[in-house]
Amino acid sequence: MGRRRRRQRLPQEPVRARVESLSHDGRGVARVEGKATFIHGALPGEEVMFRYTGRRKSHDEGEVVEVLEASPSRVAPRCPHFGLCGGCSLQHLEATEQIHYKQQTLADAFRHIGKVEPESWLPPLVGESPWGYRRKARLGVKNVPRKGRVLVGFRERSSSFVADMDSCEVLHPKIGQALTALSELIAGLSIASRLPQIEVAMDDSRCVLIFRILEPLSDEDRERLRRFGQERDFIIYTQNGGPETVAPLDEAADLHYALPEFDLSLHFQPTDFTQVNSDINRRMIHRAVELLQPERTDRVLDLFCGIGNFTLPLATRAGQVTGVEGTAELVARARENARRNGLDNARFFTANLYESLEAEPWLKENFDKALLDPPRSGAFEILAHLPRMGVERLVYVSCYPGTLGRDAGELVHRLGYRLVSAGVMDMFPHTAHVESIALFEKS
Image 1: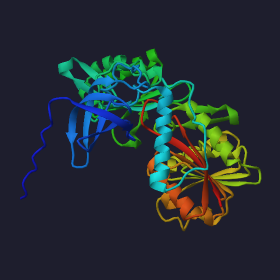
Image 2: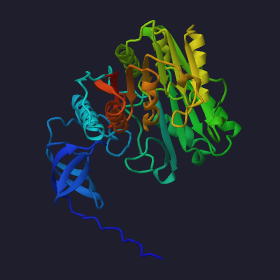
Image 3: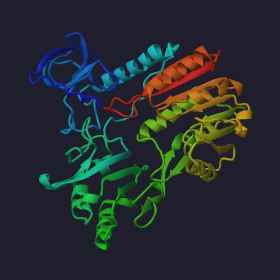
Image 4: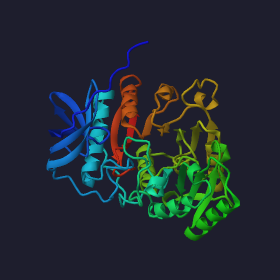
């Protein structure tokens, strides 16, 4: 049996450092004794005192103890829980500088990973307000007797513990200002210690709360939940197992969001994937359609289409749109959304876009234009099919710059496309998350 490696002892005294840049996860980067050190709470240009929180062979980690020389871009965080809660990482950075940081992250991904540069940069998409924007969230719940309360909120930074918080500034106020009420509600349930999570899903006005329960509710518990929902206008669901066990306490919610520019309304279930920021989602759809320039003679392919978030707006402009998605339930929802909105030029297929697609009928067809909106893992596996299908113009919506950079390199260097333009979209203000959009054209 090999010897157990001894944990490295961390220095106890704070250390001085000059911060050079910001990492892709929002930490300040300094070089201390020649070694890269990532410091939570530090900004570029600052001189700080920091305490080590971890040491590795390749780099060290720490957190700010004192700011000796502050950046002019530093602002006071609006939320009193910032620094403890892991929901945000950039509240101490002025809003316009957050956007600049995200643009730089995207540019770095193109340059260093894909070895490409866009011919032009799109102006960033920014919402009306960087506060109260989150309409989807997964909140941790923990009954902590020594604190005398049930904790409800996001996890602590770099920890599995639930943060001790009584409000949240980035959640929609309907839920962000209800954390204390939720804490009190759960404390009064017979299964207060057997309820680990609440999932939040909102449409344009209503809010569903899905309580994950590890033991059955008593009749009194059910009545407490019912009364809470009625008093605060929440629609209560429970989940006692896998996703298939999600069910309404009473009546099911008919959730939907409007896309007024296209005269559309898209319906969804509480567990379906939808964008967390409805304001940015509408602006993003407008930009995607504007970039793709669908015409009545065009056949458009929408890959990773979900419930039809892009497919149906495109169908109001194009001749025909084909949506492909890996989850059958979402495809069924997309078809129903097309029917509800009177669109007969949108069709949908279920297919795993990361596996062999040779048997798929749509793969043998020709398309003029395409839109990709993949998950964090990107769309590398599908890219080679695009030129074979005749795609001349492509819009790529990305939630992770690393895979967009990789895929852009493939499209440009191997598949014959130009990276015409790209830009960021502030889907998650005050976080290091970078949402972006890029336009490619066949050379």
